Image 1: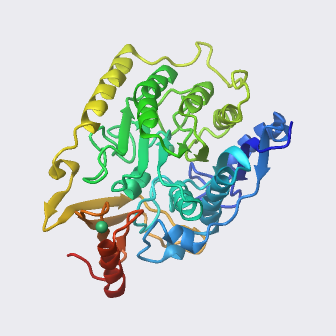
Image 2: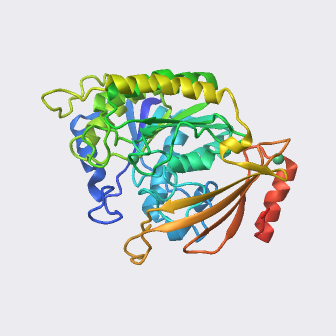
Image 3: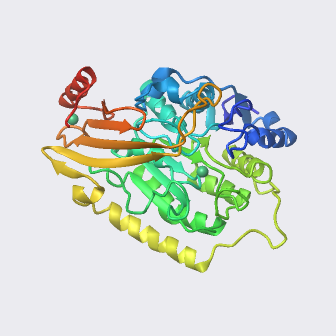
Length: 432
Ligand SMILES: [Zn+2]
Ligand SMILES: [Zn+2]
């Protein structure tokens, strides 16, 4: 190959010595078979692919995105920081032109971690993609960024982080929340009052297969990406839509995943879920790697039942077409603030939320008594600012700590919103 960047930079961080518990599905050996498969196929010897070591995210990287009422180190251990660091390494490769695309094959995952982190949610403690994005914006000046989440579970943490951000497009395809954790991600969830349409949810019924996913990407995801014109597209690549996944009910194949990846054409991918660790995850990861590297992925052979891959029903295909119409119509007609889940009071958009943590310790060895459930009570105030998307002031409390107030600024805040954020920081009080 001529000198020049590889087609794909690969960052592998399997965290073989860390898990929530020995029987947990997000377990130590989750990426072991993927690693063996990549070696067997000689993937890392190809000129199109280059492997890089992950860096460790700094405390400042994590704190740029999240608010930690109990402190970062109570809820994130070393593997979390390296997993997020792996995403950062991937982002830097692309930003600096050292690779055309990059894939961070890392664990633990991150897409259920939201703006505030009282503990773990859905196997996630800090949001790897959001930490990468904040760093890329800070160091390389990116502005408009799209995240397409293809994990089977709704990416509710990422949605929470960007709900009020008009510069980040978040699209999640997932198994319908009425049938799977975390229960959110309905089609009417389209972003906050100043960021309407920059959140898009595509819930799909159980047993949606390749045809259904590809139709959803073609009719919903692709047109929105083409119109929105992001500077970077990031795929939250969860492989748990595979038809053999033990904790979900969807019907994608490994090749179906690769084709979907080709249609989305992400600059960056960060691994999320995928729990059929032997029979599906290695093939899905391999096929996506080949697709991102511009190699022929159609030859990847995955274990398949004699009757062939599961088909998507006519009813589901019709539903996807109807959903495309619904989303197109709603995005082009911003509603009254009250219909975005907020009410406007005295110049502030207000909403109240309760967030449930099916919690787990960051470090099971040093935190054996960490609670299994945490209930967060949150009040949000977004300033209805004439000059910028508005400072967001949040008051949060949980079973573990009393109310704490903090402020988050938009990408280019006005002077007044900046002042308000500084006041909140020094006084610990906000608009409540
Ligand atoms: Zn998942
Ligand atoms: Zn402002």
